[in-house]
Structures are given as structure tokens and as C-alpha cells.
Length: 420
Image (cartoon, rainbow, N blue to C red; front, side, top):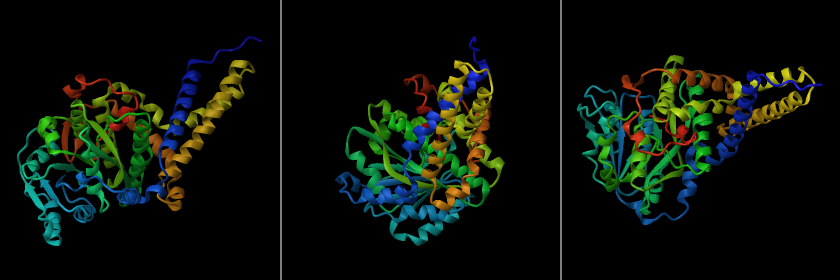
């Protein structure tokens, strides 16, 4: 009996299913169990049990650009005041005298008068990126040799500054950055948004890091020497960049200095209360990736496994009921094995990202929705000339910096996302 060739559609489904399954397995292996990094504190505490280089005790200026009174803003900022580091400065900046975050900062200043917390209220705009404009205005107040930039919605442990500053004792290290764990604040859509970070973004970075990539930079934490910041031209070099966190680190790498991914994981809040708000934020992330690396963006389809695995299950049944020949039997076996392995890997990834048993079972039904939503957001991210960030429209356009650097790998593209 003559063998029947697979159709083009069958080949596409089989290739997609196998690719997505392989990625899911890599992601599941690369991610640590959440229990091993309980909410981000355990790793920081374990790190603190080891002697830190003397450089960890140098003066640190922490810059935190603010915009609006986010839920838990006071609680998150307070963690930066409760540091064991002996010599640090906290600079908080807003771009409007009417910003409601000012009241939160005043409350913080009253609670921690010993820290001399500085508030920079400055309306000057220096470029299309308003966050960077804020940082430019705040940088004038920074007094110390180490600069740490952290987004407003980040919470940290007491040994955070000691730990992130320590690698800078090595003159070959240019910037230190941190991954983050997300928690939904207030309802269904924040839970969906937390899964975006914990079960898509963080695993993709872990996979790329395990493969040897160091081309990343996250707004959760960027620590560098003041001298290094000055060498790259200060924050002015980023004032028109959409992915400013990534490009700050890329500028530093262009000096021949290394990027270190700290073992400390900080915490972040997902607060978008509606589908519309969450869609806007996450498509902004994906369009940011597209602006940095269009080719890599095109290959993100393998990182949303559930739609491919469902298609693989259907393909397996279709092939098993089709012509009984070697080609179809081989394809049915490949599809069935990869689909089963992919489903198992996706469940393992969800288990490793779960905060505890209750959240594992609570959020398990959301996994197919999360992956499917990502697939639609990827399609939406392929179009559009602007993103909305903090109420401002920012153009999506590849920075001139892209043409200066080497091409990013397929996996590097998933590390360019701005978490701010």
C-alpha cells in the first residue's frame, strides 16, 4: 500500500505541537519550585547567610519613579526603608505637583524621618519616555557611588540592597538585575496577570539564562555604579527608548561589562482590575518585544503551549483514524508522545510557579485561558504603532540602538519586557 503524505496543515500542527512541548519541558525544568524561594524572601535570606564582599556596604542611592497612588504603594515603598544596609538614600520622584503619590511619600517621610527620604517634584520633560524623564530629574539628587533603580510596585527583603550591590565589587560586572514574582491584588483579572509573569515571563528568562544568555535588564531592579551610568551618557541616552530597562543594560554591555541576574527575586503587584486594562498592559509588553526584535517576536508562538497541545491532541486522533500506513503511524506516535509530554510539562510548570497547594488547584483551570489569551495578545502585538504607558501614548519604533548591536537570539527576545 502506497504511503499517504501528510498535508501541509498536519505538518504545521505537528511541528507546532512538538516545538511547544519541548519549550514547556525546558521551562518546567528551568523554574525552581516556589517553595524553594517562598515569595522571594528565602533566597535573599540564604544569600545573606554568606559573607558579602565589602563593596556591598558602599553608599547606595535608590531611585524610584512614581506615578499615581497605586494599591499597596506605601507597603511596597516601606520595604525599601527597612533595609539592613548601613548607608543608603531613597529618592522618590513624580512629574506633577498634583500626583496623589505625593501624599504617600509624605506619610513615608513621617514614618522614617531618620532616612532623609527625598521627594523630587519636577515637571520637566526630556523625551518621549516619561519614566526616563522622571529619572533624569531625580538623578540630580543621587549622592552615592551605586545607583539602584526599581519600579514603584516592587517589594523587597531587608537584605536586598546588600545583596544586589555585592556583585558590583567585581569591576567586570556592569549591571545587576532581578527577576520578580507576581501576586494579583484584588480579583480575577489580577490573578490572570500574575500568571503572565510567573508562568510565561519568568520561565522564559530562566530558559534563556540557562542557555547562557545575559541580554536582559528588568525594571524590578537595575543596580550599577554611578561611573558606569555616566559612561553610557546617563539617563539621557534612554529618554526616547520604549524598552528603557533593557536598553540601559544593553548600553552597559556595549562597554564590555557583564550583566548579572541576581538570585534575589523581588515581589511585584498586578493590579489591573479589568480585562481591558490587563490587555492594554500585556500587549504593551509584547509590542515592546516587537520593537526590539521583530524576528524573535515572530517565534514567540512556541511559548504559549496549551493551544498547540489541544491541537496536538486533535491531530493525534485524526491521524490514528486516518490511512493505516507508516507515515501516518509515525506522525500519530510523534504527536501523541509530544502532546502527553507537553501537558505534563505544563502542569509541572504550573506546580513550580504556584505559591502553595491552594493556589495550584485554584488557578489550574485558568492555565488554558492564560495560554490562549497570550496567543491572541501575540497576534494583537504584531500590529499597532503605539502603546499606552501610565496614560501616555508612546510610539512603537525600533530604537537606532538596534542597528548597533548584534542580533538577539530567539530566546533573548523574551527578556526585553518592561515590568513597570
